[in-house]
Figure 1 (spheres, rainbow, N blue to C red):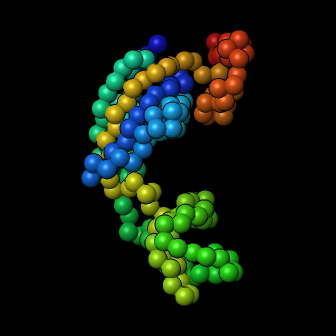
Figure 2 (figure 1 turned 120 degrees about the vertical axis):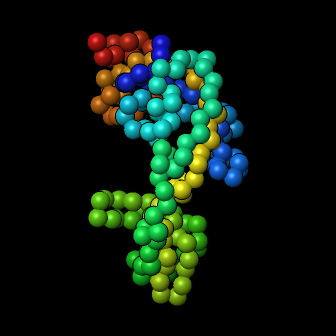
Length: 169
């Protein structure tokens, strides 16, 4: 079955940054990535590259920043009051927090810590990087109604007979 909209896809991948450094490898965790195709579960450029692929297919994909996590935006780096992180909290560069922004919650990374101010970066950690993926498509199946309602694959603990009963017509 080829990958198309509303299919649950399982795949193994390795991800290298623009400097060639290994950033992630699903095989090291012995846990394939599972996502719902067409529901923005993965970056758009990667989803486009996988469209129409089938189990057993292997491919290499290079995504420039605009097709991955976007370009870095220096306006997303700002100083905030240390008190915004609560009293007596140990803070250090590299720590990540959820912050409330004008468009809703957003992850921020601490860049620098001063006595009264903290510099945070709201860019995605991979923003501005060209990403290189090596992919192996393992499985493709129709999504269940529950998965479509949630917008992502659900636990593998579901019995196949239950999945069949809940598939979209």
